[in-house]
Amino acid sequence: MLGFQFSDFKPDEKKNTGFEKLLDIFQQLLLIFSGNVSEALAYMNDLDRQYKLTDDKYGIADFIDDLKEKGYLAEVDGDGEMIMTPKSEQSIRKRSLEEIFGKLKRAKSTGNHRTAYTGSSDENSSDIRSFQFGDSLDQIAMTESIRNAQINNGMSDDLVIYEKDLEVTDRESNIQTSTVLMIDISHSMILYGEDRITPAKKVALAMAEIIRTRYPKDTLDIIVFGNDAWQISLKDIPYLEVGPYHTNTVAGLELAMDLLRRRKTKNKQIFMITDGKPTCLKEGIRYYKNSFGLDRKIVNKTFNIAAQARRLNIPITTFMIAQDAYLKQFVHEFTEINKGRAYYSNLDGLGGFVLEDFERNRRRKVK
Picture 1 (spheres, helix red, strand yellow):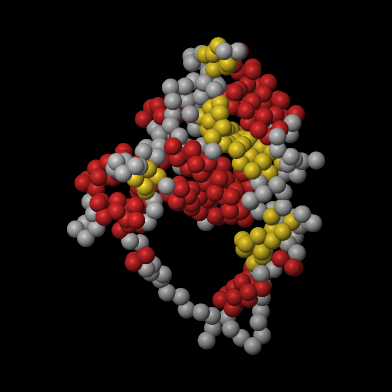
Picture 2: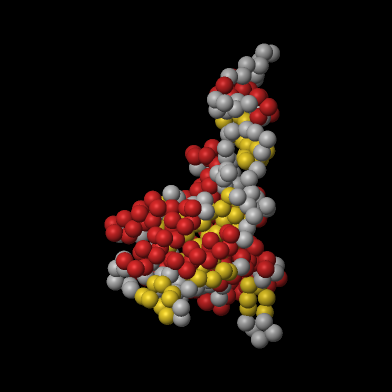
């Protein structure tokens, strides 16, 4: 017999239970409603009435009971109020990672996630990719390559392997990197009928999970900025809300650079997710605000911070959730001064851009 025979894959329907389907929706709503369990469940009830998410065998009440029994929710002092548990927060992180990074790994550009260059600081990863010119022989994944040869060329006494059959174990540079992720929580992140804060939270959760699981020696600090800037912890992310704030980009960048100065790693980077122009500065105890345009005083101060970060070898990657021409020009000038990168991303592609650039930047070797 030559080669192998394949049939259509039919997933096990039993694994995709009513609970799992509802849990996926519920976790989305928890991020949208900033961790407010009561609001998320109330909205689920509305969705159930409209779209018939449940049936006579498994209802919303059954789902709530399962959430408590499985440890996703806990009651507060027996008064009926429910809150998220650490298990629920961890589950949301993993879900965000799969939603954002899972799609990215399945894309055609998967080979860009690793460096193919070898050296004393490189180590094998768990990823397999097609052979490329320059790969060393010790990288060849023999099992996968022989299997490909049998499938492509058939079974025979003399095994024939062509270059197209070869697959290799990818390598990644063993470089420690310190990253600061800045999230804009100014009021414009929910204006114009578009929820921009929820995708930003998903990106932060996915980045935290990928660093925790794949790069445990790396560090990730997360800060939010509005009129002021402050650092938040991992467990705070699902509960983030937009406030009645202006956009003090300078305060965010100053805090980010201060955090990175304390890190001993050479590789340092800042990711900034924002949808608007800088509109605020803090001078002593006074706020200098101008929402009507790119104020020269605010813009020049922002440019100065970008230049300062460049002198410290800290690239700033800006993810701009806006398409206004004058804002693009501002970001272009800001990026040129810092020698960083800029993306003008829609919300659907935001996670892929951030994680692609994270892995690209962490391979920079700063002397």
